Amino acid sequence: METSLTLLQDANLDFSYWPYAFQTASYLINRQPTPLLQHKSPFEALFGQTPSYLKFKKFGCICYPLTRPYNSNKMQPKSKACIFLGYSSTQNAYKCFDPHLRNFFISRHMLFDENQHHCTSSQLLSSMSNPVSQANHQVIPLYLVPHRSLCHHQWSPQHKPHHCL
Image (tube, rainbow, N blue to C red; front, side, top):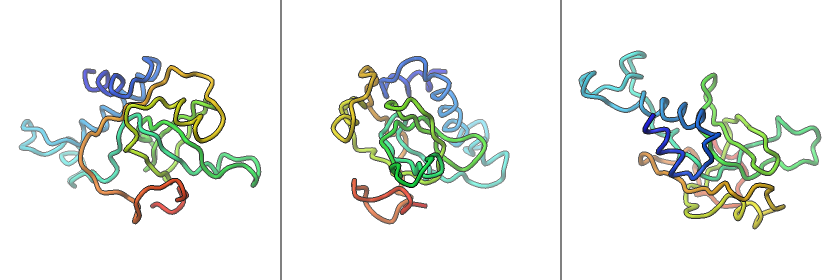
């Protein structure tokens, strides 16, 4: 519970997002080594393999999911700025929220901008496209563990989400 509250507070997200913070905290805690299991993670004890930390991202950071599967026609954008809210429990994918359209997305193909600090999601989104209807969602990412990027290139606004694995 403490970890999920910390995730929410550091991301400066509203308390209505607590289920996503709680699920993300559970995901992270189950992959951390513990002395109770001879310095193995619960994931490792259950599945017999060391968990990969490459998938870890900053809770609340700005991300760009591939939205093509959700589009109704080819003329809609292939990606849009969203807020990262955790990991899918049913598939190897990430969950994110588009505050402009107020939609949730689940996608394996995402670019992350984990370097956005002390910026509200509305300021970031309005600088890229239309203003966001709610300006009280401030995004302050929490860097949980060091990781290597899943992409073979550095992030930049020109790269599209389908370039990543």
